Length: 105
Image 1 (cartoon, helix red, strand yellow):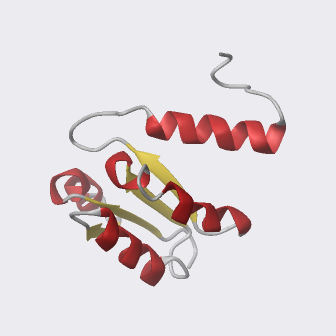
Image 2 (cartoon, rainbow, N blue to C red):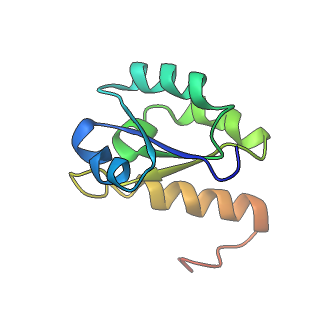
Image 3 (tube, helix red, strand yellow):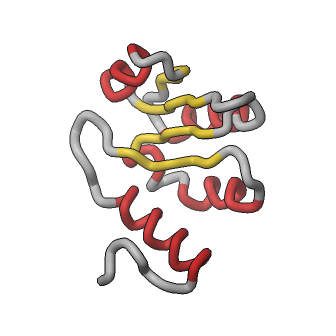
């Protein structure tokens, strides 16, 4: 399990990750993404999830905050950023550190 990474997202958004050797799991909707995350959570340390799927799964993703792995990171899709990934990172940092050290807003 050392350094194993995966990405879950729409087919076009995950293609470049697949080319770089990251395990890629296509998901056309949040239901499929939830199913995939349940299956791969114990096998991968880092899981990238496109923002379009991460936002509706926010409550489901909170369960991963309880354990050190996997780390689930929201990333922009081929459509560009919705800002959700940045919001989630900022919130996690504020919970962990008590201050906003990156965004200073």
